[in-house]
Image 1 (cartoon, helix red, strand yellow):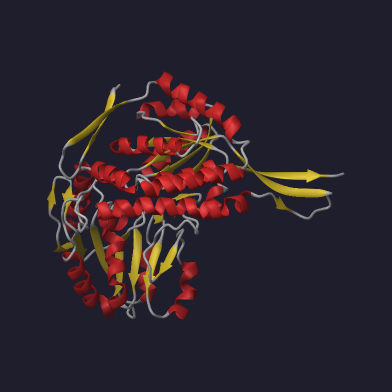
Image 2 (cartoon, helix red, strand yellow):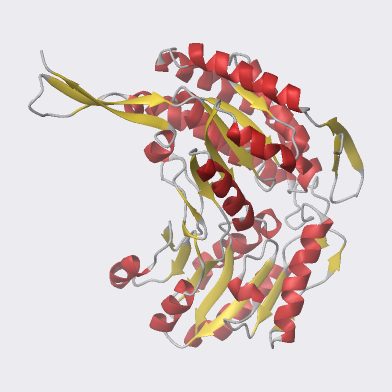
Length: 454
């Protein structure tokens, strides 16, 4: 068994730091601490937990440059986007500061009883298995509602952002959360079975690949632990004949290329109707060519580096196999270690990897459709169901098509994105359960019926 995990700057290749893996005894100690903390934390008034959220939001704002630099160093995100991620985490705190007490309040139900209501009780220790692409935001959208509901959290973060994981743990401690309320586990895959078998863990949430989701769901199911899974996606961006390219082309480019294309909800398949296809392709290409490629610490940088070289190689292979099946490189497709040039691929058909699979990087697959009906059918032709976006000026007519999209989200004239005020999650191979909004804070509670006769 390896004794350490090492982190690297993907843009420079420089080694950042080494961290010791937790031994099994250390993991058990953390589980015991979590269990003991829960017994007290779950009985704290919601108002007390909300007060700590205010501390958390203030610390995020006060130290956002430090946290953003750490993210950028560990996974290559452009610094301006890293800062925006920290600010979004603070906004998330603000949302639950304003709404948590109402969301968690007992719900009175009129029945024949003298009194009957629904109460929402925390479950205990919740394990979060989180990815590297939004290393603060993904954790916070789990931790903020889950801890505010009275649970305690254990984080198994992606190994290449271990420094970020520990910084988040310290952030919760500095905000006044008790020891054991939020802890980081630095563990290896072969420790996961015993972790999920431990009675202290009451539920699991995972954001990651479909493969990881299936594995964790099987382990959790074997041990009767609830799961929330937010897995991969290959979101469609439908561009109809009447789309306003002048107004929305920057949104479309950002939908594919932000965070170096490393987003589960990115627009991976651009399905463009034939009458606007040529204009779209020219306009989209010109915008992509203008994206500044630079060091991620440059505040003007947009395209920097993927998080790891092996991920860039995997994307390159998906493109290569698609080219062998007849796709064409319209722009880009140059790779230098972990750096992958923003790329546009045309002549894409449904049998190609870049249509069927999740492409986690800055590659846009462009598909021509004869009309809206074919565009919608192509969009639905996916194993995934995270989100779809449609660009059109005929809003009244598009209402009738909303029910045709089986995904967890449909955005009209906007990129698919997460918002604290709205539930977030997918269908099909993109997983199940919801994060954020009221639905997110109620995922890890016991929805208890209380019936009283006097």
